[in-house]
Image 1 (tube, rainbow, N blue to C red):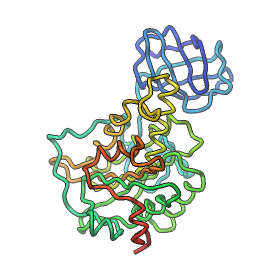
Image 2: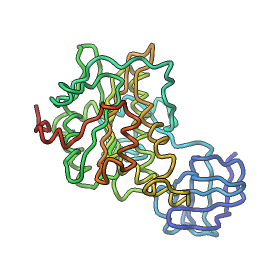
Image 3: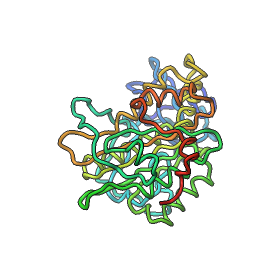
Image 4: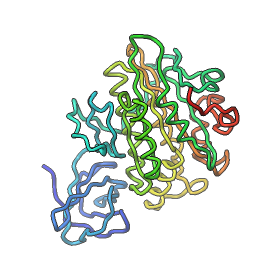
Length: 342
């Protein structure tokens, strides 16, 4: 039976400190009920004895220290998965934002998932056509591969991401292809561009979009790519589809990690990023690949803006985790005039 706590001791921004708790786990989902009956959600960032630090997905305005009730739900963040997700647009926490009905899920899955066991991996092979000549001709993308694209300040890498999303395909009449598009920390104009482009070109019919806006909470931004990979794993390994996961912009994701780490008062690493940045990125990228005995595959394209230079942790972290030499620089693609419709 779930317990309600009236033991909030401190509120600092979106962080809520709850004392005298029992059996609380890291990353557990939390529901906070305000005195007026409004409910807000968050997750556990840290547990120390009988104290739990909770970060809300929304602002803490209106939270009363003495009258607000906190309930720990005993589970992590979950995504309801179904083939009906194709053609839909969700926010960073998997809630529909396209004015369509709620998804009737076949099941609910914890978004944290697990990296693919190296022994169970199938070697990446078989061509995925992106429609970008520099990629298809010089650094071919194959099923089960991870391919980073490093951009620079002011370059329109979002246009390239949208172009690949609408043009990419696998060869073969019996192959089913889908795109899971995850945008993190984007502006409203960029979100409108992506949704409009997908709808106008018809690419929305085979795509699942997760859009996290710049004014959304940092904790939601951290969940967004995990939502994308959870949806991709369901479509690839249970529905036998070949799935292209597009992640943009991973720099915004890394900055959200830095913000949450600073809120937890952790010892910072290089340029203020947490010391576990590379481990966190690996927990995402290693969910892509092919599994022996499964027809489907997950291919990951990540975009990062390395305005801080090649030694900026988001850039160097992604570069280390991918196979060396397998990435593309957007600057070189732009110079070759490859970012145009075929």
